[in-house]
Image (cartoon, rainbow over all chains, first blue to last red; front, side, top):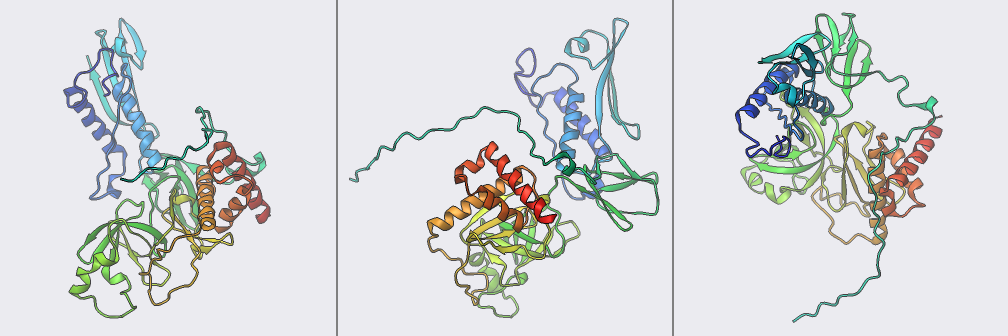
Length: 126
Length: 306
């Protein structure tokens, strides 16, 4: 995450727990989507830098990385699309922003491969 | 104490431009390039017919042949594959490549050829100086660096493909070998047309090597061919100004064609060179001039085909 991406300047942009967790989730998501059996003994690095963080960080990273991988010509099973959904004050919301996420309601992040309707990652925070 | 003689040059006008959207250069809608092209993205089902064999860029998903990369569907009889629009160079046996030496190892050189893995040039795949035919000894191994060092450019042909995808190259012909003075242009491999020969002597006064890996080498037309040297001799004589201008113009033309995704082969490069003659060499890099030149080139190519 860039230091200027959040409302308050981040003093430690890398290596904090949330970033590490997000990196791990991204790795798991793309290991499911990329045809890794064609790349034995090779490593695919995905670098994502968040310039503006206003909720739905993980979803934005997944969408951006999908497009980058397709542009690079790396074989994938399908597009990976991600979005968040939530329930705040008895109202169902989609694509939550930072205020919605920290408002005290639940939020659900979903990454899925649309054609075959396979879910790559499902994560709920309360 | 040396005196620096500073000459005051006249003020040269600097060209500044703000970023704008670039208009896409297309011919009339009836000749649109998308006609007859089957473009797919990952996840698109190509066919549910089980009678087809699957090639690169596809995978089987519950008896349905699905694309795994974004590109064009190619069908050769019963084989279906998808050629990605943008990818690293996937070499095949017989391709001509231009590569740069990155490492000198025991009995082999490693080259960078815009592919997923570094290509390999074995010591046994190069010609010895003087054209001898003998087994490579330990002495040859020690003098490898005298022939090819890190940073040298060579032209070579793909001999075989290792199981992990790395290419094995050879320079066992007099037309391949170390490249001397010239200009390298790095473009996408998918823009180079496959032809019978990739070495061309253009009538405008320069020679070109269109490597299949997207590396194009421009060099002044060789005067006298030194047959005995066998790829070792690199001429270090100064190149004349007219030759250098031709090569610079060709390089800018290649960049213009690459920016507008025009297929590169000797005819298209030559037409682009001719249509760029009314402009100054440095003007060719301007977007409007690039568009104009590419439009004229495309027009000429269509006329030539029709």
